Length: 311
Image (tube, rainbow, N blue to C red):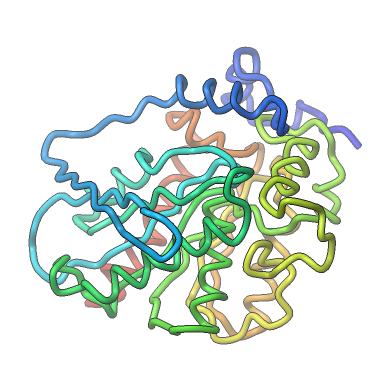
């Protein structure tokens, strides 16, 4: 199946003339990583407080980028997990910075290990250790351990979903929210939207290649739910969630299905679906009308859970 590009919001089309779909594979990964690194343009506003911590675990040394606007005590906090198909990306993420400044919250962005050099569960373990570090050091960090959320976009959203499951099974820290932005959670893509081969930015072929690198193989339906949250049988007892996705995103139907399953498991879940939007369009073209609506929805969901929900 192929996507009819007439379905895409007209304001989002110009990017596609200059930014072709990523061609992710083991052989070409270093080149794609370089392209993404060169296109990254992070703006650090005046007043941003930035600190890089080094978390030593039994497996690795994990850099943590701590962003905040102020040193006020007892701040809400977000563990942010960057996207990049589990194989690329950077913790110096614009959304993490913007969340910290706009909400006056502490955001910890984790520089987790990437596949294929470090396949699952390396990246998830890094995120879990970062979460545990935040909870254990809440007083020193000046954060409120009862107001800690986790979140991420794309593969970062997939890691956040897996982290919620792993946390429930292990320490069960009382997370107040999970922010899942078009999460990459299904290694099978066995849905209607998952059959379309020519999605902008992130294609079916690239996604399957990224999953193969993350799993270091192709486990199919036997893949760990901590890696591909759609494989989880039981979603009960997870933190309240917000899931958003574009109608023209490869992940659309798997994300909708996951939201429906969360609701069926009595987990409060807001689902926001944006017409004409392809994968990460709101990041590349933030001034488009539909992008502004999407970004406002994301920001309000997080701040309502962390800030307004506590008042």
